[in-house]
Every structure is written in structure tokens, then in C-alpha cells.
Length: 532
Image (cartoon, rainbow, N blue to C red; front, side, top):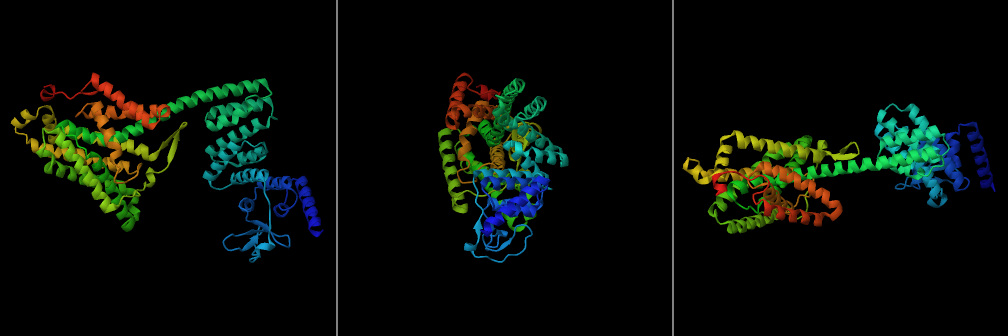
């Protein structure tokens, strides 16, 4: 009987405070256990509208089933790990009450929805702009008419332009869902959401497509059609970006192969393992930095890149001097020998590092993403694209502006004539193989940021690398550039319709048909030896 009278008194106090327009925080918290689910949801909404900084902690505890009622009627927050209790209003220590002396505050779906809404409204007042922006986006998705008052208050107090824009859009979505605003206000809300033009705007407009007001319904239909068209265009742009991203990876993996295959005519089946060595070099560099100089982690890739070039390039020179140079003119034996080297390199890495994937971290400047319109661009993919073009530019300079580049081009065009002119073709072969292998090591540095670093890393790129080289024209790095990005974009446009595996098969069939018409690829290397 006493408990019933206490509940009645609390509800009466809450009703009086609400009627006065300023429900006291302590009264609201005390009212949470009282009444039914509808009453509880109403109290939760009042706490959300209160703007009191303490309310967020109370509502979070209620959502996590950590808000309890003691035998004397006090509402407390109980910490699950220790069992200690503190007052929900003032945070005073309430000791460690027995579990059977505490009463749960029950929730249903309506109360949970009210909790999410109230928590979002309170987060709109958070000092951190990022949290306010996240809360504003949640409010936009919820489109709850009961939040209009809170959104108005948040808009009036907001100073960050980005947050203010999303708050206005969230209010527009809530206004449309309520259906009680004037025609002018509803049309303004439709216009604002149409300008946003993304999936969230589409979700907010779709439920009111059959609005009672004909003008509003027509505006919503037009806005949805415009948004669908815009999203289709942005989807195409996103696919192009994905294709460029894949193309940059293929370019890094294939350009070194294009050099060795074009100059020497060697089918190097160990090329993928040289890429793998570059990735493991990055792993080792990061492990050393983590252990001895964690402050340099942001520079780990800059340190790893030249080391990966030297490690992979050195292994490449050793392969050429130890095996490949004895097999010139015997392509089948060269293919089998380099395939055997690839197996040995894989096993050596398994023996040293183990068969499991290794963790290679992203420096802070390669982490996260940003939005370009409605297209998401990740920083690691963007920097890999920049890195690929930088490597390509440096390679062009080496080939066009240095003595070794001149000798490599001479050997490519006419090996016998180059030898007669005094060029040491054996030395050029070794340096060429080393250069191509070193670039494969640089590809491994880039791939370590987007793929699993394991002994099988290179196997996933060797076939694609050969396809790029053959399609672009063996020995022509401009052809490799064109081939990499053409195949990358084509692959990403085929994947949504055919799937990843079938898409790659279709690409392979297309290359086979293309090679039937142009056996030397997109850009054939010119020269007497080649023409012969």
C-alpha cells in the first residue's frame, strides 16, 4: 500500500512539474520505476528534453539494465563488475546492496525506442562536434516528430556549420513525417532533403511519397526521382574510383614484370614472391619500429620502401645471375625454374615467419576515409594511387634520362646490335631484372596496406600482372599503365553483374580475343629485333 501511494505521489509531482514546463531532474529520475511502459517512455522523453548533462548517464544505465531501485525507493546505478551502487541523481555512494534487494526497471520496445531518441537528443548538446554530428545523423535516420523541439533548440545553439546542416535536414525529415506542418514548411523540407540527395534523404522522403497534400506528394516524387538519378551517377563514379584503385595495384604489381619480360623475354613465375618479400620487409620494419622507436611509426612506410626495393632487387639479381642467365632462349625451362624459385621463396618465408597472416598497420595518415560528394574515398587507396604514379614517373625518368635506361632500351630493340656497340648485355640483363624485382618489392609495400601479408600474397597478383603486360604490350610501360587501369575499371564494372570470379573469367576471355587481333598488345614495342 505504501509503495502504491509513493508511486501515485511521484506521478502527481511529475504531472505538476511537466505542466509547469520544467520537470525537475530528480523528480524525473524518481518517476522512472513508476507507472506502466507508456509512462516510462514519457519520462524518458522528458529526460531527453531536459538537456541535463546527468541525464545521459542515467539513460545509458537504464538501457544497459544497470539502473535499479533499492528497497527504500532510491534509484541507483549498479556497477555490474563490483556490485557497488551510487545514487542516480547525485552520485552518492550507496554501498553494495544485495542483488535480491534490488528491483529492475523493466523495458519494452517502446521504451527502448524512446531511450534511443532521448540519448540522441542529449548527445546533440555534447561539447565534441564529432559526437554532435553523429547524433544529428541518428536524428535524421530516426525522423522522429517528437524530436522537433529538441532539434530546434540544438539548431539555435549550434555553431559548427556541418552539424547545423545535418540538424536542419533532421528537422526537415521529422517535419515531413509528422504531416502536421503547413504546405510551405513541408515543401521547404522536401527541397532541403532533395539537396542532400543521398540514401538518408531517400529514406526520409520515401514514407511521405503519398502525402495528403498533392503539391507535397508531387514534390516528393520529383525529389525521389532526382535523387535516384544522382545516386546512379555517383554509383558510376564510385565504380570508376574502385577501378582506378585496383588499376594502381595492378600497375605496381605488373610494371616490374613488364620490364623483365620486355627486355629479356623471361617469364618470371617468381615475380609474385618478390612482391611478397616487399610486404614482409614492411612487416619487419614495423616490428622493429614498434619495439625500439614507436614515435617513428608514421614514417614506417617511408623507411620500408627503399629497403623493400633493395631486398627484392637483390633477390632478383641473384635469381638472374644464378639461374636465368643460363637458360636464355629456353622459355619453358626458364618458366619451370622460376616457378621452382617461387616455391622455395614461399617455403623460406613460412619457415621464418610462419604460415599465418602478419599484422602490418596503417600509419595515421593512411587511415580513415573522406567523402567526395556521395562517393567514399579511403586514404590508403588514394595514397597507393599517388605512390603508383610516383613510381611510374621515376621509372620513366630512369628509362629516358639515364645511361642504364638508354642501354636497356637499346637491348630491348636490338640485342645483337647493342652488343656490337659495346653494351654489356649481361650486365644490362642483371640490372634490368634487379630493377623489375625492386619495383615488385615496392608493390609489396603498397599491398601490405590493403591485403593480408602471408606467404601466398604474391600468388593472387601474378596472373593479373601477366594479363596486364600482355594486354598493354610486352616491354612498353605506357602500355602497362593503360592496361592496368583499363582492366581495373572493366573488372569493377563487371563485378556487380557477373560476380568477382565470373567477371575475371570474362576479362580473360576478352584479352584472349583481343590478342587474336593485336598479338603485340595495345602498344607494341618497336625495333628491328622485335619486327623480325
